[in-house]
Image (cartoon, rainbow, N blue to C red):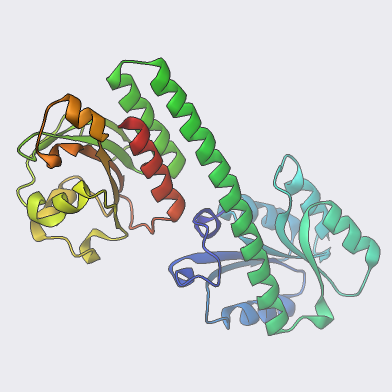
Length: 324
């Protein structure tokens, strides 16, 4: 699925216009494709990217290359039946439904039943389609699939946290624990870089673990002296605050903090403090409450800005506790 579904944003969200909903129209009639395109593009609440074709070959290519969020699929195509496409793309799919709205020029119970059996999510009769009906159907499907993928991702997140917790219990080697956490977070969030940053008493720090994709520069073992940290976010992190920047240039950061992030090509970042339990502080006989702030668990997006979702925040929060 495209970024719209992966980000769990529904058309009713205030962020809907931040993402493009990809729609593939597969219909033999050029006039019908033009009408559906007009209906969809007249929707002011959602930003759409639309592809269209009249044949099976091109439809399969567009499906595989663009991963559309919604497919309008006519039964009557230039080189065959739309049900043939459904049969091909449904092979090996484990999702409960495909994001396909089947179209037919007339009411046919057998076609409708076969389409739904092959995984289509909805069925419309072409003579009954209006701008309102089509947009409402698309929004309903986007909502349904967003809820499904949010639930699926939450389940995957719980499994990931349980797996990492098990590794922590089984290992006393901190370096291996650090490495496992940054690798799993980067993979799960599909981020460009994930790091663990450990503070020194003077609020400088070192990157003690990193997972990073090419071509982004590595920051592992970098000693960072952030002279603006104390007055910027240091105090907030001691209080357990989370920092999420969709775009570092619009996040009300100080110029020196932006310069530091730009050094590592960061465009968006998500930061969760690693706070030691109070029992650890007492056992170390340290009076300064700032020592509770051991370090930071950080995710970087370097290729583009990024809207961080609640599931991203929850994952980092839970893993920061495991790490602490």
